Structure formats: structure tokens, C-alpha cells
Length: 504
Image (cartoon, rainbow, N blue to C red; front, side, top):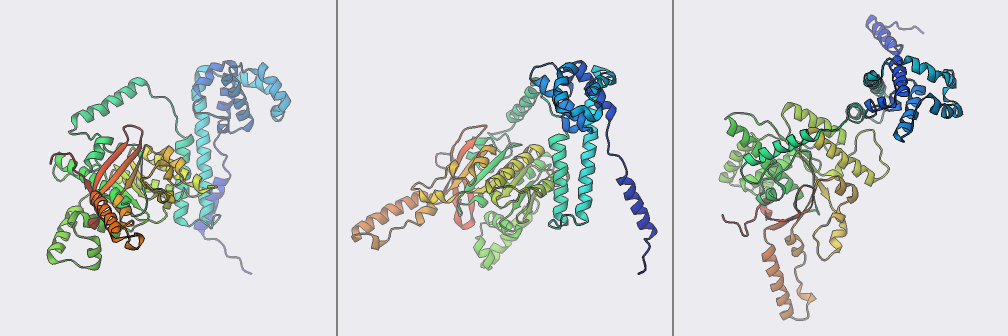
């Protein structure tokens, strides 16, 4: 059987890959030994590295275990030097491979200066980050060659991005305190912006006056949960808020200078409805044309002209819809980052979180843990991109078994994690929906008089509940809770302000 010789290009590629595989992973043994020597000489040097360095960051596992032993003694308030560590290492046999406890003495001679401990630590950490990048790169290459046949190309990209994100956020960035004067300056800056704004809205407006008064608008880094039973209008309300926020961003840009593009945009991840269905809802609301009639084509020329006019106006709004079904958390994060980089990002709406998947490559043991990972991830997106995130959520069926069907926090599906991670939890409730199902039946009453009385009472309650909805603000970390009464027009699935005691 004839062997086919590789082409020159293939030979060069193979040589290049072979060269990469023969390289030694990044490591700085001198820095590792110098840092350990500095720590054994003066334990106060530990303060310079303790907030970002752990034993796993050392390339030499023996050095890493020595560092962990030193750290344990120092954090327990004990002295860590060759004398106090000798018994521990002799008993464990840890140092046998490097010459025994005499190695501790060699570490003392490797110490260059205590003042340099922070620089040694950062050099060790940087080498560790580089080794992690090499591992991620090897995984990417192996998966692309077919090591993970369960992941298609798009999922592999998402998994790679997720691995890089974890490296950047969990271990790759230095943490630390913010001085109180800096925190005060930031707080004063927020207060100044609020002072110069008209009305009660400090953050991004929801388009609902009374809700803005309770919350001050939508604030960066907040995760807000909007929950309700089916047919309560969760999607319609979230769409109303998203549309109002996008219109406010456009108006702000136009007020600054006509023709200016908005500095931010609104992203809607619609996992249940298509982008076309969601757009139809917004058009129905703004054009006051029933969505059902739009789908049937049952509209006149005037209504169609109004429909076209509104479409042209709405086309300018900085509103973006992603209708990918069962999108993963890592893919959502990637798309939010891209939108923030290219168009600016001011608000994210997710409809709804139970339809999401956790990050690619994770396999939660239970549904509760899976939802917990998703809510924590959404909160992380809000903090990383400094934008409010509104996530819609379903409620459990236990609501239906109660006489009063107004939701409570315990009604949230997998409620522990959702309630814990959210900065605000809101429930949308329409009494009219349940009253319609309780219309009295004549056969259930002993006489026509009792039936008539029941019908009159039912009609009275229906009149009170007609075109009304309640937005129950059950939890809010930064403000009061309570109920916001809203106007709801079922024909156009439209929410608005309800004037009960307000002057118009």
C-alpha cells in the first residue's frame, strides 16, 4: 500500500505543532523559592500576596504545599519558620523528593528581599495564568478534532468562552478593597445625577409612573425577577418596560443633539416567542390594533396605514431581540458583551429563565441547582456589564390551590435561589382573569333569586377588576415594597398607568 507523503504546508504545520508540544509550560522557580524564603524569614510578607495567591498557583507542587502550610499557620496566628514547620514536613514526608528538611534552609538562602514579595507573587500568578491559557487552548484544539462529539462547533465556542470567563473573573483578576472615600465619591456622583434629573427617576425608566416612584427606575447591576402565572401578562409587561427604556434612550440622544445615536440599547432574549411575535405585540400596543386582527388580516386601510407609520417610528429604537430557544448562560453572556461593545447596553430582559440552559460544559445534579447557576449567572452579567437585568419567571401551581391567588415569594419555582439572588422580586396579578372562571352557574343555585344575587355580586367584582392589574413588589433591597396598581387593556395586551387619585 503506497504511503502518501504530506504536502510541504502540512509538514510545516506538523513541525509547528510538534514544537509547541515540546515547549516547557511557563514557570518561575526562582520566584517561587524566593517568595517562600521571604515568607519563612518574615511572616508579614504574607500580607503582600495573600489576597491573590494560593498553593495551586505554584508550578512546583512541593512549593505549593509549603506555601499552603505557611499560610495555614500564619492565618491561625502562629509562627511559620523552618523550625515550626520541621515536624509537620518530617511526618508527612513531603520534602523527601527535594532533599528533606534541608530544603527549607536552601529556601532561606534563595530569599532576595522581603520587600519584593509582592513582585514574586505576581510573577508566580502570571505564570499560572499562562499555564491555564495553554490548558484551555489544548482543550479547544482537542474538542475541535472531535474529543467531545456531544458538542457542535457553536457549543464549543461557548464552552471556550466560558472557560476564559471563569479564568478572568475567578482567578485572573486581583481583588481588593475600595477605600471609603472612593465609595463616598461614587455615592455622591449618583446623588448628584439624581438631583439634576427631573421627577423621581434616578435609573432607567420603566415607562410606568408609579413603579418608577417606588424603585427610582432600573438601576445598573440589579437583577429583577418578574414572575406570574400563565396569562397574567408577564411578557406584555416586560415588553412594555423594554420598549419604554429604549424610547427613553432614543429621546435622551435626540435631546442632546438631533441625529445622535443612543449611547445604549435594550436586549430582549425571547426564549418562548419568536422575534416576529414579540414585534407584533409591540406594534399592536403602539398602533392600538388588536394583535389577533393583525394575524388574521382583519384590518382596514386606515388601520394598516397607522400600522405602517408606527413601524417606521419604532424601527429607529435601540431595541434588539434574540429569539434563540434554550439559549445557554455562556452564549447569552457572550452576546451581551458583544452588544455592549458595539452598540452600548443599558438593559437586558430574559423571557424566561426556566427555559434557559446553564453554561455549556456544566452538568448540575438537580433542577434547583441548575436554576441557581442560571440566576447567579444573570446577576454576574448585571454586575459585569453594569446594567439592570429583568428575568421573567414562572410560578408553581400551588397558587391555584389557594382562595387568594395573589403570589408570594414561596410560589417561585425553585424559589430559594431565585429569591436569594434577586435584588427585586415583582409579581404581576390580574384578578379579572380568575373572576372570569368563577362566573355563577344557574344549576349550582337552589333558586333563581339566589342565582340572580350571585350574578349581581360577581358582576360587581368584575366591574371593579375590569382593565386592572396589580404589580406586587414583594422584595426590594434598595427601597420599599408594596403594590402598584396598573391599567391593563387585554385587546392590545397593553399595560399603563392607572389614575385613581392622580390629577390628569
